Length: 88
Image (cartoon, rainbow, N blue to C red; front, top):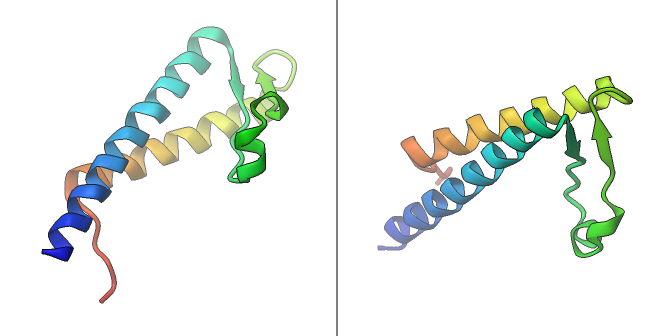
């Protein structure tokens, strides 16, 4: 039962993150700017501190962030389709 619940939670979280990453990629392509990803909790709480990279002024950082979001989208899509395979 515990494995089943973990599987469901993992897929729900993966679907949410897949939608979020897809939305960020779509907005990044249309608006030609993307916000920097940071795993730091303090940066998430202080939303104003996140940097925005524009395609015309910082193309390398822009494409790095777009690539990061694309990899996250692919990983979340794989977890949503195939499920989480824990070690143990």
